[in-house]
Image 1 (cartoon, rainbow, N blue to C red):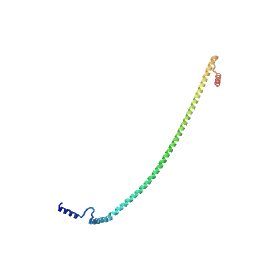
Image 2 (cartoon, rainbow, N blue to C red):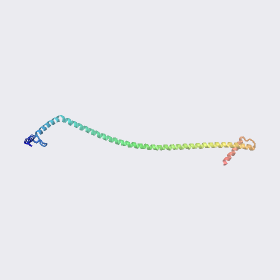
Image 3 (cartoon, rainbow, N blue to C red):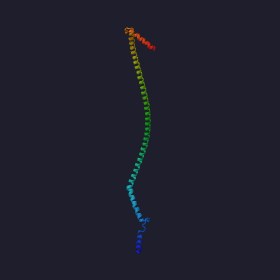
Image 4 (cartoon, helix red, strand yellow):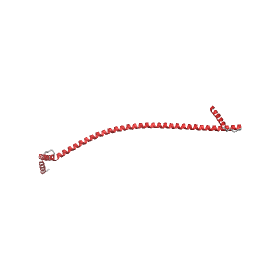
Length: 182
């Protein structure tokens, strides 16, 4: 390097006077502190009260919201417990109703079976009475026929006509005796 260049570098170094990152410039520091103090003075007089008031309002709002949330949480827990109790009670009531319905259904079924059984027995009794009545009717008709046939046969054997009430009575008595002996 040449001498004039070296002189220029040294002159540039001398003017900056160590303007590195760790060097302190007291004049700049003094004026920075003065400007910061003035700014702080005006800031405290104009904005500080507003900022503090807003922060306190926000803090109160948050505290109110937290207390409301705690109340709502406690109320929700109480409602949940009440709901759980009601649910358990309704389940128990439903089970009870089902048991009662089952019992009532069983009673109805038994009553229907008993009614059907009685109706069936009544029908059988009526059918037996009807059969007995028809049997008695048929026997009476057969007796009349037997009396008429006996009288007709006796009339042919005797050669006379046997139609009187006494003749009929005598044949009927004979048939009754025959019936009781058999």
